Image (cartoon, rainbow, N blue to C red; front, side, top):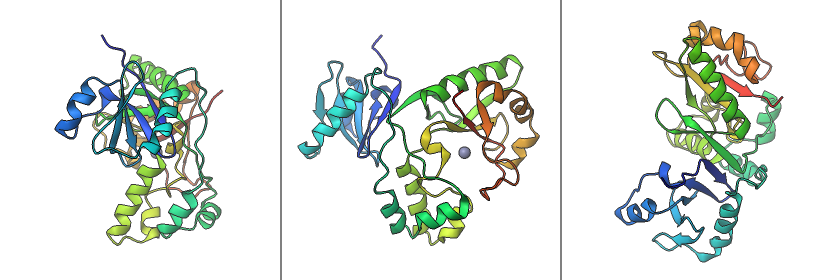
Length: 261
Ligand SMILES: [Zn+2]
């Protein structure tokens, strides 16, 4: 069986995805994806190039500017598991927030939240409830897999609702809601400002259980939540937003963050 990469490699401009996790969107991409190890995507999800087993880059039509190819090559180098993980620079975030009508400093002051950088590499921690790849930091992925297995032994079925989310993803949610004429305050009541979500760092995930809707306070009354309250700490996970937390964020019994020992 061919080697199947299990990491997502991030940069400010583009991402490297394992090809086996992606579906071709056009016939022209299908053959290229079938023979590729990796796919270079831009931050909006468009496929730019493929990388074969010998680490050669193949640009996908339409031909994208070749000045990107040095970025792409550095992504391929970062796919080497020996390369240390670093955090991506956050310049540009403040400007993009401003374009959405949000003052980053003011938001930070009001909530006590800090901007959260994205890591350069994430690990596949399995799949979430919706069969999407679940990306977490290496440590959080290992801890989540152990936590989920230990819960199963005790007869508790835990699933993941959502793990790592990029700044761009959160920005997209925000922009779509703004386009539907929702005010900034209305959006902030339910979504963290882009760049300020714990999900950006890859250490946080939303946990659910069978038969329970995602991200509802009712999760607090499940067997799963009671199990987590007693055991999650043994695996390094803590509830980020308990009742009456100082950030003014609603109580989120489903949102847990892994803290390295
Ligand atoms: Zn969450």
